[in-house]
Amino acid sequence: MKKFKIQICLLGYQRYLDKIEKLQNYSSKLFEVTNCIVIKQLPPCDLEWGYSDNCINQLLTSSNIDNSNVDLCLCFIDNPIEYNYFTRDLSEFDSKTVLCSFYQVETIFDEQNIDIFNYIHGIILNEIVQIATLHKVNEDYFLHDDTRNCLFDMCGLKKDIAIKYGVPSLCPSCIAKIESTAVDKEFVPLLNKEFKSFKKALFYRIIDFVKERPILSIIITFISTIIINILSSFLYELLNFIL
Ligand SMILES: [Zn+2]
Image 1: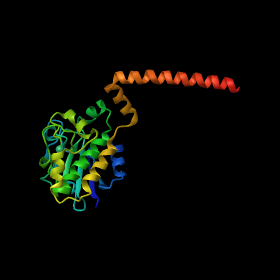
Image 2: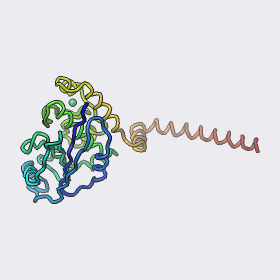
Image 3: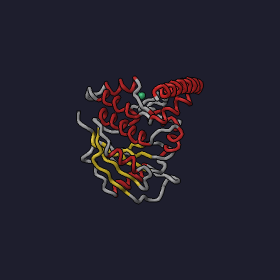
Image 4: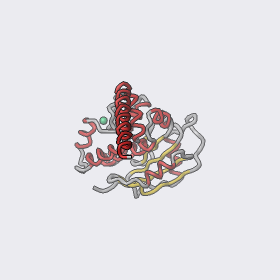
């Protein structure tokens, strides 16, 4: 199966350049980042401290952004965007450009100890599904209002983005929609494989375990302490016997 080619476009000041760099070096069987464009200076905000689709469309047009050699173009910005969404399809610009905002994501992800890279990676998989099935970005085709821990949860409650991209999956109705198109048979299994790479670092998984099962954690700690005590006494006796 061919890899989807992605162009990254960084708009204005970027706090997560290390994550973008990680993405550029990321090895995936589904996609590859072929180019990264930087537009350092942004026009004045036209939606309080944020930007409308129209304003970003004009910026991309005046910057001569060319997507002819890629399947998808993702533009990352720190400011809020129209309707305070996480992503906006810029269909007025072309059928493969998406504006992605980091606004409020860090706060939500920090609370759940989720790496911000999950957000970037998750958006890419979300958009790739649209390109693979519809040959254009049109998230509305897949989105559902309720939260199902699915790549196409609407996240009307913004904090649900941590569920959507914590360790994402596909709900049965989204899988059915994908499989009803002429998409490659390898596509869904490869997506599921990518989802497995989203797990948290071991340290944070231990913290989550303790938070979710405090009594069991105390019991495990208690039993572990007894076992360590028995083992250390045994070792002490053994050393005494040998020496
Ligand atoms: Zn779904």
